[in-house]
Image (cartoon, rainbow, N blue to C red; front, side, top):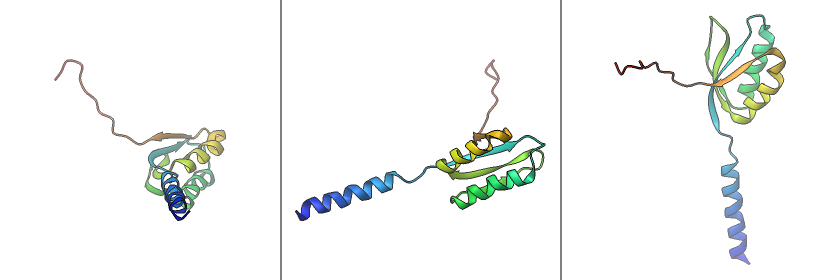
Length: 100
């Protein structure tokens, strides 16, 4: 009986470890007419969920963040009415088609 309790406990630990939300690096942007309150709400929601704001943009209304996937889905859902765009932050490269 003790063996089964140990196995059950080990499975519970393994399950909770796999349930940890994956952190994603994203860029969140809003149309220029969006109020600061909406942008600040998005940043606050991300911070409350354990995410961090890594950069606040000046030329566009938006920010970069590293945040759990679940909160990004939540922010995406409520901010859709404000036409927010949440996209993965990634490196973009330009290469010529003639091999130079």
